[in-house]
Image: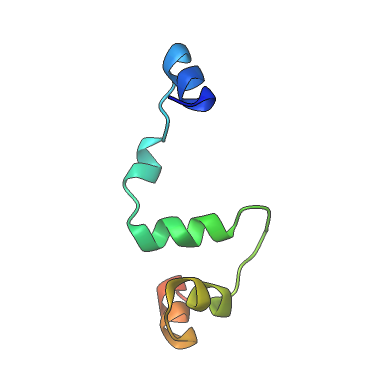
Length: 62
């Protein structure tokens, strides 16, 4: 068990909130793209998921 998981276990903190556990694989990847950014683009999502830009735009609702 790593330091973070030990800390979470000792503090009885959930390692991953329920809302994150309910996301599918693609949604988790898209969410990770926001790390350190305020916005992401359909081309970034397309490249990360291996989709066309149009499909990525549809996924994002743009």
